[in-house]
Amino acid sequence: MAPCARVRYGLAAALLAFMLAASGLAPAAGLWTENATEALAQAAKEKKDLLIDFTGSDWCGWCIRLDREVFSQPAFVAQAPKQFVFLKIDFPRSTPQSEELKKQNQEWQAKYPVRGYPTIVLADGAGKPYAATGYRAGGAEAYLKHLDEFRKAREKRDAAVAKARSAEGIEKAKLLDQALSALDPALVMTSYGDVIEEIVKLDPENKAGLKTKYAAIALMNQIGSALREKQFDQAISLADEALKSLGDTGQPAQDIGFMKAMALNSKKDKTGAKKALDAALKAAPEGSKAPQIKAVLERFFKDTE
Image 1 (tube, rainbow, N blue to C red):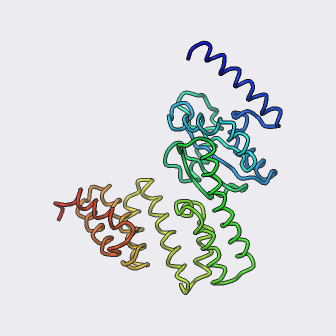
Image 2 (cartoon, helix red, strand yellow):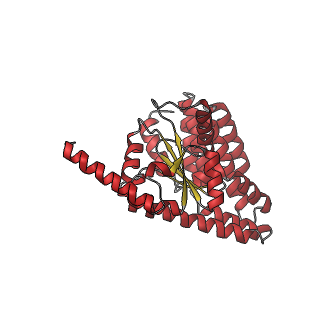
Image 3 (tube, rainbow, N blue to C red):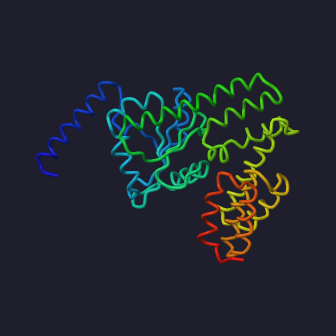
């Protein structure tokens, strides 16, 4: 950057800081806290949601771009604090952190489906997540619209939960199902086990089909956890129990069979993995994973008996 450009940039930054201070807003960096306890307390006090940024601030290129293109932009700094309290859960490589902060960040990452950086989790004031996203091109205003769509999903969740409080039995189960259906399935699997358990109890005879639906989700969550922890024998055992309980046809059977195949393949049991994939395809020939299973069979298991 040329010297004159640096001067212009410095004046612009100073002007922005002044304007934000005059309007009662802090500069972008001041919006964020790394203290989860403080963030939760502030969200509860101000009746706002949490925007949690799981990031690698000093090495992750997409994280740095998200900070530069969205979080530090005037449009975001002016608008987003009206709805959110900002919590940064950082995993730097060079920046020093206290052991207490490292422990907090590891605990918070374990709560949510964080598979890479940046992961942006939106949660209510109690820390219950309702959406997860990441870097998106388009700048601050486009990102604000993106977040607003997620907040509409939370509103649908909350409206259904509010109605469920005065309902009973199957009707309550249906309303809770409606609440969860507004959310990302990955979040439902990892963060709404208590609601899933209640739905299953409210539909004990499966009259609304919800017991089967959420029992399958709960089992898949357990299998997924075993896979992530590389407990492949446990994943296979859970999959077999699930298929025995839920039956070997339909979309849940396909999903579970696919996960079983992943575990078997990780154990280098290629023959067993192919059998599991064949069974998963047979369970739901037109199912959502059928194209993926066919592609995997053709590419990796063509010559496997």
